[in-house]
Each structure stands twice: as structure tokens, then as C-alpha cells.
Image 1 (cartoon, rainbow, N blue to C red):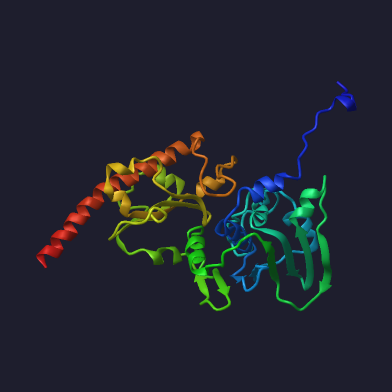
Image 2 (image 1 turned 45 degrees about the horizontal axis):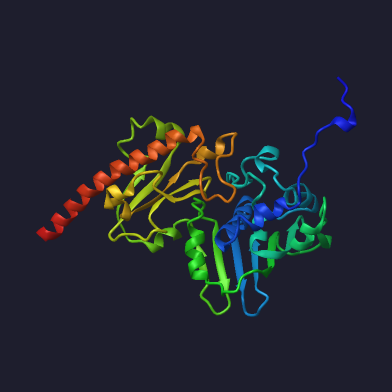
Length: 351
């Protein structure tokens, strides 16, 4: 049946979607910077240097990587295309063999959660491109926004890579890179030895972040590795390729430190949690932290990770088995922990 043009339905998008998905969802530095770091990781960078400048009222953050950079065409077709699923339109692994962490194509909006102006400088194939975006200008447009191009395909001998400068930052307090180091370190669990994040600020000691940095802030007592030696009958964990480590400490942990972090492709998908366990039933849980790699979560066609990557959408039935498995492991380990603690105390007394 032929449909009259006047009777057609159409789905429309408001430009203020950017405000809702960026400004409203990302209010703090760690998740915003984590999105930029993820982009650098996906670009096969070995080093990401983040420079914080709060020496005057006009605070800036500069994020520079030595990754593959972007051509002018890639800027248009990939970086500036909101909601583009990279895995659908390009390879799932990078040239270095890294599994791509980006999926939703919304992470770039996180920048507008803390900054009103952004400058992007990128070099690839000895060609430099530079453009700027202004949040207020974006929100004042009706349909299409055209970033201001400052440099277009200029020949250069600059090193390949990308620099993103965040300007007009809505923040009054000074940058504390030591606290940021701890927060950012918990958002990644990359296994690459050649990937380093460095935080710099004039007058402060540079802070380097590697995969194991997040454990510098605790004193382990006992550890449980996954897959465990006695997991031969744990078909769920084996079939899903689950790996990780649960750690107990000598002293109770603070609320923001205890709990188990879940990662997929080296990126946080669920913040420290006990997955519905009644932690008041045992004081053992006050001593537990650790990480579980659940890469299979990212292999589902359905996206089960919240937009700001702070949690899984546990209401999905596909995650029921994972949640139950996590609860069982923690419950059993709490029982083992009590035995280990008693044995440890006995040894100390005997000494």
C-alpha cells in the first residue's frame, strides 16, 4: 500500500539529548577522564598524559596520547557521530590485538559533563586537524552542529596521536591528582604492560597509573584466585571464561573500598558491590575487595551496561546466573575466611 507523505511517522531527536547524556550523567572527573582514556586505549596508545592546570580562574585539562590519531574523514564518520557502535562498523580488535572497549558511541558526550569548550588536535598520516566545540553553541542549534575547524589536513612532522583540551571547566576546587589516581585506577583492569596513564600538575609529583595501581591502597591478608584450583566442576565459570581475584585485608575497609569490582575488556562495568548479599550477616564482608573479569557481558547483542558504566542492568534475566554465582562465591569465601583467620591467630599465639 502506498503511503501518503503527510501520513508518515518519523522519529526525531532533540539536540538537548547531548545535555541529558553528557552534562547530567557525568558530573565528576574520574568517569569523564576514564572515557577519554578508553578512547586512547582503543587507539592503541601506549601512553596517556593528563595535565591539570588550575593556576588561574580558567582551569584546563589536557589529555594527550600517542595512539593512531584520526584523519579528517574519521573525525566526521566516527568521533563526531553520536551513538555510533564502533564494533558494528569496524574490527572488534585493534592493530595491537586489544579488544575494543567502546561500544555505545556516547562516551565523548561525557566531556560536556565538566567542560563547556573542547579543542581536539589530532595527527595521522602526517596530516594535522584541529577543531573546537562549544556546548552553548551546540544547545542553541536546532539540528546539525558544525564544529569550528581551525586546521584542516595540514602537513606536519608532529608525532601521531590525539590531544583533547577541556576548557571553561565548571569546577571551583583545585585538582587533587593523588585522589584522582586512586579513583581512576579502579575504573580499569587492563592487562597490557605497555599502557600507562600519567597525571601531571605543576607543583605536584606526577602520578602514574598501571593496572595494579588500585591495590596499592590496601594491605592484603588472604587471596582467592579465579579460576580456582577446585573449580573443575564449576561449569558456569569455566564456560564463561571468568577470571579474577578476591582479596581480604588485615583491617576493615572503608565503604568505597570494599566490595567486588566487575570488569569487561579491562573497563569497569559494575562498581564495588556485594550483589544482593546481606552483608550484615557476617563482618567478613567488611574485609573483602577484589575484581572479577566478566568479558562475556560485552559479547551479548543486548547492551547490559549503564550509560555511565557504574553498574550492570541486573534486571536482565541473562544476568541472573552471574549474580547468583557471585553471591555463592562470596558466601563460600566468607566461610573459608573465618577458618583462615582462626588458623592465622593460632599460629601467632604459638609463636
